[in-house]
Amino acid sequence: MLGLSRASVVNIEKGRQHPSLHILWEIATKLNIKLTDLLENIDRPKRSQSELKQIEKQISAFLKDESDQSKEKVAQFIKNNISINT
Image 1: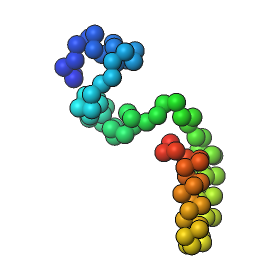
Image 2: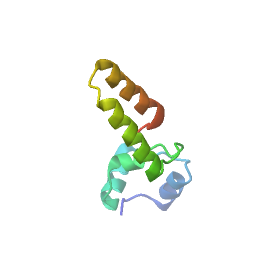
Image 3: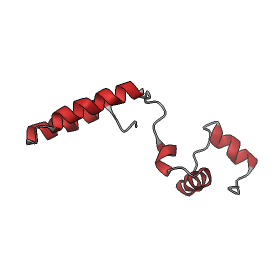
Image 4: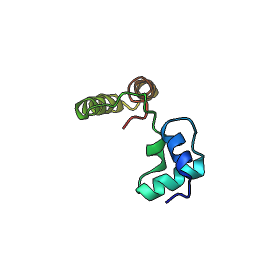
């Protein structure tokens, strides 16, 4: 479907070859997913639904106070806990 050789596909799957951005775009398009889903860091642990709900509650609590200090707390909390994992 992508016009790649079998050897290229095997090398990409085994991590011996890195796909170019346009190949990743084609893969995402064919799978009907967002390109960012392919670029997600696989080494990062996945968060459970309960963990995500707890994080959401903590962020909501920080956001009740609209001060700059509260915004800094939210930013720091996200850096420490979420790391774009949802």
